[in-house]
Length: 73
Image (cartoon, rainbow, N blue to C red; front, side, top):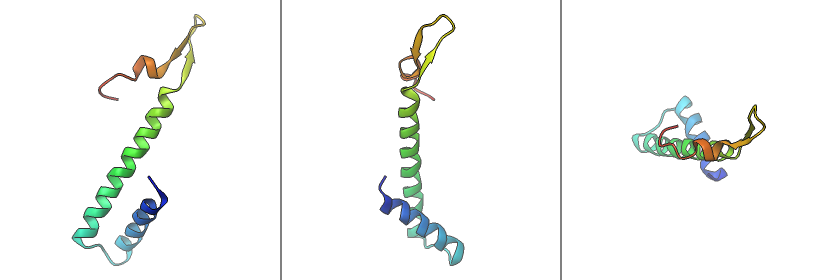
């Protein structure tokens, strides 16, 4: 997500607190928030998939390979 969209989210948040939003602006805000959350989740999932854990027996397990193919997280 680029900074212009994040700036727009912040602008809409400030406007919502001060004067309120129109229905069109509320829809835009909700869509931008959904996109932002999806981006955060994707980045977090990518980071978690690249974590290696050393097991008690000395083997190294990659969490992405072990848990990455689940349908629900």
